[in-house]
Length: 218
Image (cartoon, rainbow, N blue to C red; front, side, top):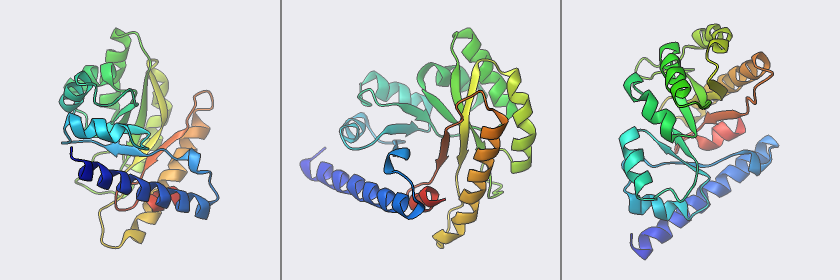
């Protein structure tokens, strides 16, 4: 990367951080409660390595193969890795091998494959349950009612630790329309936390480039 490209990236990260802090103040939250995840899909190892030197807490990858290539190149500089894309069941073992957290668990079928892989690897895998709060047919995720029905089944997966939920709001030109979706995500997060008192349910993954400050506020 050129010095100019790195400077622009530094400026962008600083802008996002400033807006996150403003949103935290507006909601009466401590800025340290909110982590910044850089979605690094399609970015090369050089760009990711430069980003890892900035004020970014963790990286999110959508594809297992991309993760493997960048990981081998040392691009992430030791920062945590989350899987944030749609995970096919035949990639479950690779995901369990490499990711600290799998955010996009969208079915009990996928959960069963992750349980099998984690058992074979003798580890407990942290995951989030993805909820399709907006009811968009093109998005994966549990419907809210299916999510709540699935929670009692989680005891059947001893090698899986559900740390919270993930919500992706609808793309819209009127960003305030995302607020009810994030509010619903927070309510389901609280439901999960109350349902699993013996597990540290402490992660609510919400907000993307166009709406992250609303997610922070909600």
